[in-house]
Length: 555
Image (cartoon, rainbow, N blue to C red; front, top):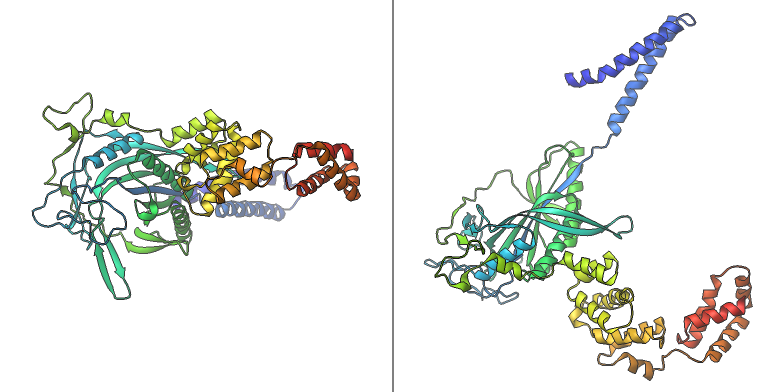
């Protein structure tokens, strides 16, 4: 307080000296009492303005977000046992002796899971540790039969990576904003079983089908500032994992689960106390949960309170986070080396495996790198450069499974420009797919059929409105072609110019007031006359021909 007072008195002293000079000059003309009052009034006014500025100064609190993501490895069997991995199997039907933690059972590492972790680390620009270690993490849940989880606390398989992600920003959400987040580590670990709570009978049932399923835990550093950035990062990671085939990424089935660590602070100051929002299974819910939690913590600090270090859950119905348990007492997981597993060795061409090892059980980094597919960011860039489409369209294509292949198949078979094709794929096709909850692979309109329809449109045989009508028919009648529907329903453009001219003349004669408006300079009325002609011809008249004829008649 003393330092603060001393610092604020310096400018007042300077102003007092300046005002004293004014006082000396004015003493001849005014009384001393009047001048003193003026000086005092000026100082008071200065002090009040300074206090007002301090009160109105923004607090500049910003959110800080880090993520812990558990991705279920796409493998036929579990991480340390031969039990199958299936979703929605009967309870406790996929449990081996090791999964149930029966005495005498030992873990056997699944090579596919190691390969998946290495591939994911390479795709995220991580350094692959040639030697990594397994540890036991002790905690006691009913759905964790052994009382510990096998994980990689000390030395994970991959470290120090980056994930570059993009999202649409700006006022109209049309500007592509690209950012990156640091990946601290990628580690292998076991999943736990499921506890199913029956509130009606006041009991908890245990399903161990998920116990022992291989997980990759990806830890993202606190480099994000809001829910939108975190959701974009998770979506990008989801696309990468799906492209690699290392995780199916279905959040609704729990194949990708996100924990968000959220805090707020003033830039340049240490990070604030964080809260952890657990088990979020949707990118949209993740954004809402983080944004709410940031605003909640800001409100707590502004009101003079203290943010508690606690675990919270997100209620999607209310849009709020709710407390689950506090984390003030640090839990001791009693980490220890896993005695039943040797160090995990990953080899490279520079450090080949020793002779005598079974090649089918060896993971070589360079061989894994050679199998990396086209990643989403590279694919988006290629689509923009190859087809001259907008960046936001490339996001739509890549984000929908199978849509890029569909789009490129149509482009390869049609004479229409890619920019026209993208409109049909993202608006007509994707609109109906989302409306009916279908995937691209389930579309009743194949790329070949859509290409034929667009060729009819490009050749001038049908109008754009008729093309949309035919597309609806193709959707409802799989197996038919666009040409068949056009011929059966006589939807081709009217080629008789005389007939179109007569219809236009009839429309002009029956709407003299609109003709006068056009001649008076209101050219927008011409579109209404064009619409009347199209209605008369059921959309079969060439719009360009109709416009030309009407412009001549109304000029």
